[in-house]
Amino acid sequence: SMTEYNKENPFPAKITERYLLNKEGSSKKTYHVTLDFTGSNIEYRAGDAIAIFPENNPEDVFALLKALNQSGNETVIDPRSGSEMSLEHFIKTKVNLIRIPTPLLKQAGDPELLKEENKELRTQFIANHDLIDFFEMHPTSLPLQEIISYFAPLLPRFYSIASSPKVSPNSVDLLIATFSYEQGGKVREGIGSQFLCHAASIQKTSIPTYLHPTPHFSLPKDPNTSIIMIGPGTGVAPYRAFLQEREALGAKGKNWLFFGERNRAYDYYYEAYLESLVKKGFLKLDLAFSRDKKEKCYVQHLLLKQGKEVWDELQNGAYLYICGDARHMAKDVISAIQTIAETYGSLSPEEGKSYLKTMRCEKRLLMDVY
Image 1 (spheres, one colour):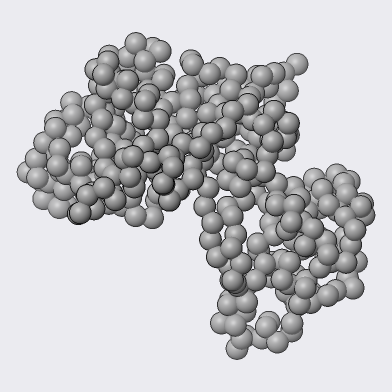
Image 2 (cartoon, rainbow, N blue to C red):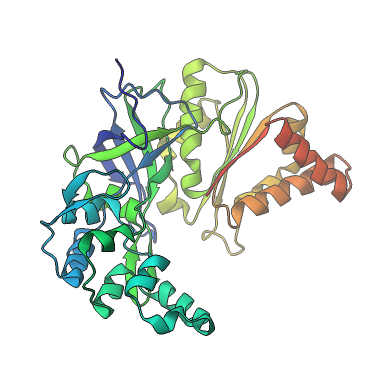
C-alpha cells in the first residue's frame, strides 16, 4: 500500500540542486533549492506549498546542552510523539530555541518576573532572551524529562512550490530568501532558510517534508481564462509554477505578471525564464525595481499606471492573484485595485469595496500572503 506522508510521518527528501539567485552586489541572498521526492508518491498541484521541518543550528544546540549541563547522549522521550531519542537529537530537531514558554518561567525562572506588577519587565525579558540565555541565568535541578516537557515545539516552515508537476513530477523547486534579525544583542538567522540554504548538505541531509495543499490559490479550471499575477520578491515563486503549468497545457488565456525587487541588475529572479516567455508572446511582464529610480516604484504603482487595462481584464473575467508580504504589499495592492475599480468602473468607495468582496466570493481574487 502507498505510504501517506504527512506532518506526523514526513517524507525524507534530499536537496539535489541549490544556487544563489542574486548577483554580485545585491544586499539580499535568495536561493533556488530543488528537493527530490522520488519514491514518495507525493502528487502536488501548481500553487501548492511544501512544509519542511528544519534543524537548529549545531552551535545553538551545543550552547543549550552546555547551559543544561548535559552531554547530549542522555535518552529522553519526545513529549509530543512519545518516541525515545538522544537529548541532542531532540534539541536539534524538536525544540524552538528562541521562545521561553511561560510554564518554564513559572517552574524555573525568577519568581519576581511572574508578579502582576512586573508584566512589562516579563514581556521585555522574553523578547530579549532565548532558551540558552534562560538556562545560563537560571541553572536548574529539575529532572531533565520535566524540563523538556516545557519547551515549545520547533514548527514546520512553509514554502510555495515554484515548479509545476507537469515539468517536475518527482521534485519541487523552492525560492527561499535568507534573513537575519537581532534578539537581545545576538544576530539570529531565520531557522528554515539557514537550514535549507546553508546547513543542509546537497544529496546528503534528510529534509523531513510533507505536502501543504493550497486549494485557495490555484489556477482557473478554464485554461482560456486570463490571469494577473502580483508577486514581488519571493512572492513570484508560485507564478513560475503557474507559467510552467499553463505553457505545458497550451493554455490560451493571457498571463500578466507584476514582479518587483530592489535592483534589476542583481535581484531579478528567474530573469532568463521570464524574458523568454515574454519573447514568445506568452507573458506580459511589468517590473518594479525600487532602488533603480529616484522615486521608489513598487508593484502597486505599476498596477495603477496600467489601471484601464487591468480593469478591462477584470471585466472580462480575469483571475487576480497576490502573493508575498502580508504586512504592506498586500494591503497596498488591494487598495490599488479598489482605486482602479472606482476610477474605471465609476464606482463609489462603498461600491469599490463591495466589488472586491464580490471578486473574493467568486474566488477570482486569490491571496497567498505571509
